Length: 317
Length: 248
Ligand SMILES: Cc1cc2nc3c(=O)[nH]c(=O)nc-3n(C[C@H](O)[C@H](O)[C@H](O)COP(=O)(O)OP(=O)(O)OC[C@H]3O[C@@H](n4cnc5c(N)ncnc54)[C@H](O)[C@@H]3O)c2cc1C
Ligand SMILES: Nc1ncnc2c1ncn2[C@@H]1O[C@H](COP(=O)(O)O)[C@@H](O)[C@H]1O
Image (cartoon, rainbow over all chains, first blue to last red; front, side, top):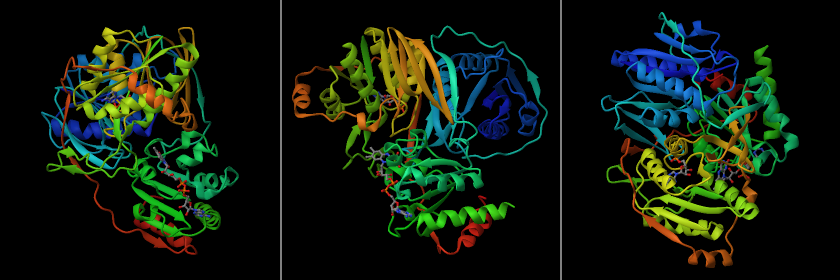
């Protein structure tokens, strides 16, 4: 029996989300005495995966097609699932992972459980804790099927190394008759994305206007962080809506979330609550964010941010 | 052109979430229900296609009679007809298979779901529905332009956007970006009056099999009070983040 993990990569380089599902999969495989099999596409740095305890890796060559193709990827994974007598398949919570998971589960007649935040509490039947109501609660969900696809929440398990030896296998890239085809990609250059970031720096209406966002960007840059914003900030067009985080925006599950000039409305907090450590900088000591944060400074963003950025810069030198 | 918009009935975004019966059931007492925000973006896009191309817009929800007010609201916004599949939704697979049997009976060219519902956050119904119907699904859809039966689409990905093409039929997962907040339609008196005359059909579910079972709920642990640092003591904050929280 086997556990299968989808190892995500970009331009041939394995993403952190890929290593996190490998770590999580290794733990389950050890608990259950199962084999851990990875499935990836065009991975160049395969040796990294030996550090995360994969027993086998199917590294599928897509013949120069570099776009994520949900139809072909899910077909490939589903035929490996059939071949390997699988009980659990794990994908990440990235945009691609969450796209792939439900489609794959329908193809292989599996239960699908998303937003999973812990190792299963029991097996046969499998039962696991997931977050729901946009992080306002958790539930324990039991699979009613022999096969289960899990989508693991970002940063909920972390990276755990376990040295092993790995066999690399090949498989032909699946064909697709779907009319849906990717034609091009607009990548926001070299910026860290909210989903991949360990640290997120977020600005709210307290920043007063788009012309002041260099403060947020400079701070994010010294921290190697992604930038985010509250909903009104993107609604007013100060920032692109891809930065909008919260219940109706992107979810954030970073290690550190720094909120500046954000009041901490319930809809904002819901989407960022699963971040490990939250810092708030706000001029109003009554702002609701102080109730949700771990650390806080009551102060004027325009004075505090430049100082913080300078100090962090000096510390790096 | 026939458009189906799948509507999930969810607690208002400001709701406090509580559970009852030994934490096994979501306590709806005092909770206001709304159209799932992602579905409302999708519905608005559908109404634009209705206005431009004369498309017929049907809204559907899988749920008991308590979901009817939001279906009426969808009709007041401009949908032509509503369908309620009469079963309490318990799992994304169950919902998707109920929707699939509807789509097997009536041919819809475009099926709109939301990226995810803000209650159970499965993010699964659209992808499963499309796979059962053997048609493509586009998640996180932020643009949909129709040229005959050809589509130009955009998907939001981590750190960017992807441009795609497809042909009908298709299922999409709508989200903000497909239309903007300011585009949302607030029903007027005329819409509300007309909605009363529009058909709301109730169907029995074809299949009620669930693939998962929610056993119980739990609220996050109360967190301790915030540690305040003086605005003059930036070094103190950096020290705490580095040595206590260990996040730098
Ligand atoms: C259906 C629905 C869904 C929603 N979904 C989301 C969502 O997903 N995400 C989201 O963010 N919001 C969401 N909202 C909106 C939410 O209710 C709040 O309105 C929003 O989060 C407030 O944004 P803000 O904190 O930037 O602005 P404000 O509430 O205006 O807060 C600005 C803060 O900045 C502080 N400030 C002002 N000047 C300074 C200064 N010089 N230095 C430091 N601090 C300063 C103020 O004290 C204040 O606390 C939603 C609302 C609805 C109705
Ligand atoms: N009970 C339901 N009835 C109709 N559509 C639903 C229902 N639940 C979910 N959906 C649709 O599926 C989308 C994704 O929901 P979910 O998979 O629950 O996150 C929602 O945005 C709706 O469009």
